[in-house]
Image (cartoon, rainbow, N blue to C red; front, side, top):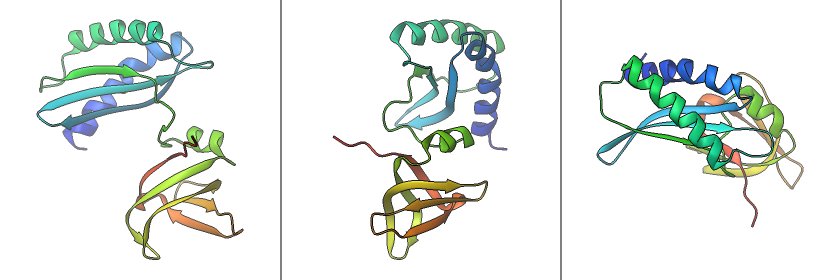
Length: 155
């Protein structure tokens, strides 16, 4: 396990009790470098939407725990936020609630000379995701080949 994955796993274990006691949903935790800065991000949601006050509540409690545990060697910026409209689908519960919804799929490498697809999420399992298209065809992608899958945003 990489250092980054280890940090994310430990951070998730620390934040989960806060999430559970407040009836929130932890969507994702990531430790990423952007430019010269490291960010520890937790994406949190709840029924009816995750407010600024919810964000502040989680941030304060989580920050105190992170200071106490002090397991991240690098200096970083802590961010707590809602996953937003274009939230990525990562966990089985994300896929389950999105069956029948329009999604965008980006692949690491081209499949049939294309790296991006849009269609309806028809099915998923531990290894694959199946997308239906307007012409009544379907394509099944290996999950390991998907760089990003998220709900499509229509404006």
